[in-house]
Length: 324
Image (cartoon, rainbow, N blue to C red; front, side, top):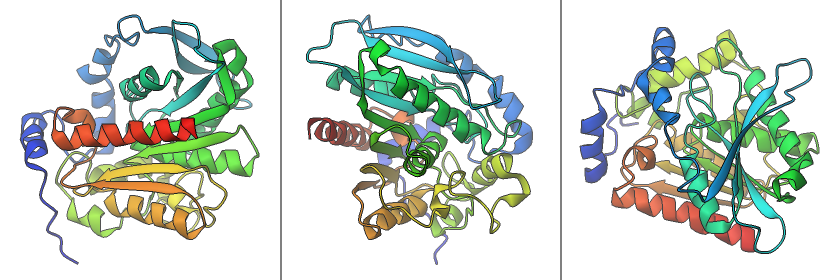
């Protein structure tokens, strides 16, 4: 196995050079508090989530898992009346390595989709590791999905047309959510959008080794995130699939999946393997491996041609899913 990483796309390499002093590849546990207090999270509060008035935005507290605190849902509904019946829902789970982030992180992506396909966006806040290890994050995400399905009528939304979506840790939690909803016979999910998802706590694929010290989220950062979530269980034999979906033995009976990932990032091989296992289980999956893409490239460099192609592919898949 070569430890030489694939080259970055030239446009992405230029963008990475600009942000390298702000975002280093290797997050450690003792840096988590500093990043949580940094300007990046505060800037999210300044985002225009209405998209110039297209959406009505509401923060709502809803019941969390049994015995746990309430959770916060960011609900974004188009201000115009529905064109034809209840709208579909994009249920969004934010990223942040399981250790940082709010329900505003990355929500600009599903909002852009929703504007095109006339959907409601619900973005869930979940408790973060290491203060709240597994299963707190995924149980919060599941509780938010249950509330959304049960109260869809209040949102002018259709509980039979819910698509779950997330990037990075949010992608991993979305994959876990699909497994939970299947196994608990919970809300019906018609699709899962897993963007550069964090799926495998073992952190031992060829791409994880190739990208050590390179890009945005490397092997050290990945170990930090999984250790925060799982403690000493990380990488061991007893990690449940609802924590690390790559550990699932049965990937049958899941909703159709869209997966994408960069060729030059830590998660490449685990995402490709997950898509292959869905196919091997008789399921439906569309996989895109974007050449030269680093972790989260389309968010960091949205102007790059490969980023625009990735975003367009996500929207095309979602449109086909909702029109089928």
